[in-house]
Image (cartoon, rainbow, N blue to C red):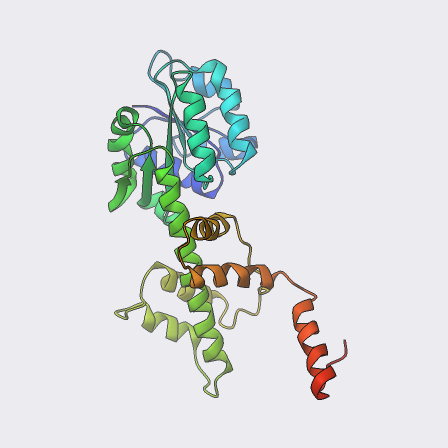
Length: 299
């Protein structure tokens, strides 16, 4: 089976190399041609247009993996591909799409005889390169067709087919919500350590916690790597983006009336990290000054 991959960002590029390593012929393209030239030097067939990518399959059943930003770019890419696809061809969305969009896209393409699979992809760039965690949803026949390839790309035990269209992205969405909470807890723990009276080596703390502790794991190992390169994180500003998945997770918790305070608060904390003015803190300070005469700090 040949694979076409559209989108050579950090994850897409690493996945393409992983596919190559597993013995698949990979045809890749990207909006900026520099990435295409770069990956062509790595033994992947690089082409400069969607038309060239589709044509590279010849008469074979096409399997085209999208690694483009969630939202309108996915819809735009589907519309670009549609005139070039035939019945039973397969489009895979490996990005972090909203599962509601995935269900809609599946129905739209199924009506035209095209299979659409959602594959949530986790493990970071290192995982994408050497063994990812993959969560798939979609109709049974195309899922079974690509499952051997996904198992080859995944770390041992790291592939699951969850059934109905949208289920792969749904599982990945909840995964990312959990990730927000775990990252927030790690950040808060180091915040307390930093505020303590002890002169602690954060690189050493994170190294010890990465080996044999209950909280060891990929996130702690990555924290250790961060402290190795910047022992007190002096080189970065404490603003954290929220890319959407935790927003959707919180919306689902509200829809289903399921309590999710840790995930919700971790999301709101990310929002707060972008607040240069800190207006809520100004409001609280003003109120304390009004009712109690407490000191306020002037800018």
